[in-house]
Image (cartoon, rainbow, N blue to C red; front, top):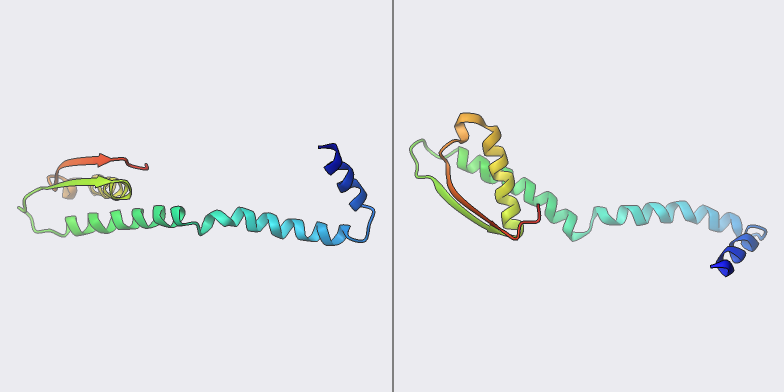
Length: 108
């Protein structure tokens, strides 16, 4: 409130102001960068990479193989989503590989 504003104005006229002002910018960078390494962000990136690898593995199967059924929950559903996305982008090569898909609780 008003007390914090008054204290900030008073600090501007002291010898501590340059120190506090210099610390503000690095602290804001640290706060902004905090989301870069949090576990959720890491898992989101890895699930996309894993989905791409799964699609590559399915595309590498011999022609005439039986189609697969995929069931995924949570991040497994996200992996399947990215796999299907890559299979769809691969054109005719990606057709007939997946028969059925169930995505449960997908964080997409």
